[in-house]
Length: 557
Image 1: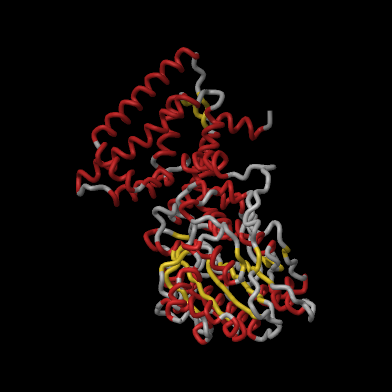
Image 2: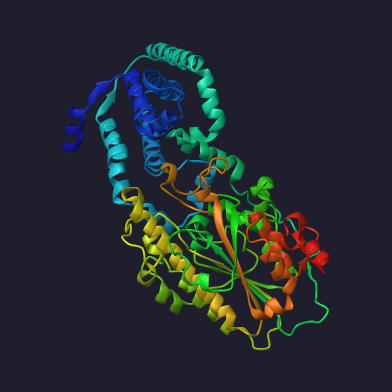
């Protein structure tokens, strides 16, 4: 035997399986979940000693539940396997729950599976490494020094029966004593269980694969097959060209256009735009919002499985005769652009705007749009819908989402371990990313303004918002039912060229009347099709921003 192995064997301490399971249950139930217990303490109806008793009862219930589970699955031959699995999963999920306030749900699992290497690297930090050493590596090392004592099967079963009975007794007794309080708390805060590690990650992963994972070889469902463009009485020599910019992680409350005290929109504020101040997102993460907003389904009725294999907005626009192009500076279109042209960004632009890891500043979208327009044939008579997908304010590395000329707010948080930055630094870093988005959007509008071959239009809206420490939450992806407004209240604005306004005066006038109305992603599908003069029976008129006031305009006339 190697010397190191012999030394390790000498260091090993013998421990019974009952002791091993109890220690593991305490680690999983108590040590990893202080964020959950802190939340429970905030929600407790008691004060003083009663509050401490309620909190203590909650700790015992969680520990006893894990202990009961371990009696069923953890035997001498399987104990260390399950323990290692739970420690790794629980330790990593606890970091995001306890340090960033992230709630682990099936949507978060979907985000994880659909993210790319660049986004994943942004999550790594010194804090995460230290956390991993303490809460993952250290317990695994301790586990290696423990040797589980050999016991007869009969003795193991007897001990497991006793421990299971004790665990059930504690669980039933304490839940009975505090039933009314637990019922009230968990009825109002159903997603609290998603803060308990490692069950949150395990349960959410199983739920994702059962309910949300895309199924292969499902037939494509046609949608809007009757789509066609309604030609005006006097056809224009200038076809329509609409640029739809899908923002990333921008929240409305950080736009000075919406009343934010810091001037985050110095360039857009000087342009003739229509700013919509009361808009909400379909989801709190890209993996949900992006397919939803293009699907033709409203948020409350959104069926993710159906959206995965049904045609959407871009397919309908293409069927109606529009040349549809997707230009991406993010982690992909989540299936929404699979059947339309996907512009390949030239290598020269990547060298200009991207770093060594392949992460690019959003001005690459401006140059890509200019390159795309430059290469259109001069006698082109096709109408165009171009979608630009931003990197935007994607966190936690907000400091990467802007460059020096667009960083007026100092000091900044120059780290992706954002929970370690001061509130001022964190907000400055995020706000600077909005300032840079303001510049990018303004440059896109200026590019369209200079193009006289088309009636040009511009529509910007973010996929979801972002939490930057409010209510102890960071990033995004909270369950929609409990998500703060920072994650659901999004910016949206439009701009139209003089030619578009001249030839579509009623459209623009109609939109101007709705700048302060309550709107959402639900309005994108029908309203964009109407703006593009596309008619189809699948348009729900109640969410069509143009249909909403068309009668009022006619009555005025």
